[in-house]
Image (cartoon, rainbow, N blue to C red; front, side):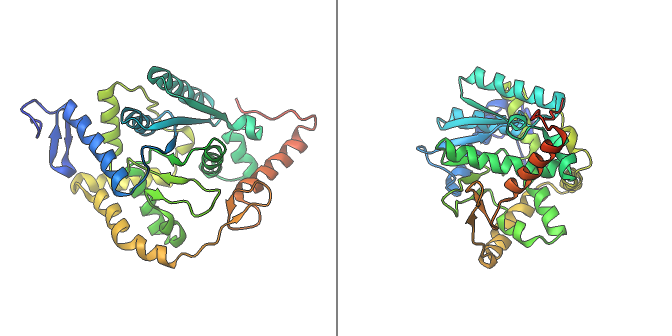
Length: 313
């Protein structure tokens, strides 16, 4: 199997594109994907200040690497979630990458912000860990971006992520979530920063191949809290279909963006207000984050009356 661009032996095969590439031409392919996505959806311009959400995984580090290489002003943000050794390893990998590139990394501790990490937060809220984790990350990405003058928040969500999310939303016919699902979400409130997903046309395997060729070390293991998550089930189902019919995930998600989302957007009329407690955008008087924070503070007041926080190890 040879590269479609040159006579060299291919190192990466992309069945959904009926293509194969040598390492240098594969890197060119990935760079072109990012450039095309940014231009097509007008995600950001050279003068934008981009805050890149960094987990320590392959997708976020690949995105940060690509943006830095392309000359964008891209600063990483790593939120330490207090998930034991997994969080320790994620922070170390993020720090090492930033140091190797001479890039700026903002680090934020959920433990310091709330007085607890995700495992204890899940028990306090009596909700799955991913629920509280997602709420915190969405809120903090926007809040930190606003406070530090960033104009865009970029995340490493890939095609597998988007197709799995779409499947879950369709199975439950969650119209509001479907209307909001997009690789580029413009700000519709003065306190909301634009959100983009420049790698939405690349699969997990493709970002992993990029990292392998570029020599990027990343956290391989899944978050321990993800065990049993519906998103993993949907990814597995879609991967099985993809094996038999390459290109299915791309057709599924791109078809939604082209045919369904515009109609759903026209139906959606949501007026955002400023949260009475923090000023961040919300559909009610008090945002979900502040309501959650109130419950956490009440828990700490009861269980740590001297003010000592109940930290996860």
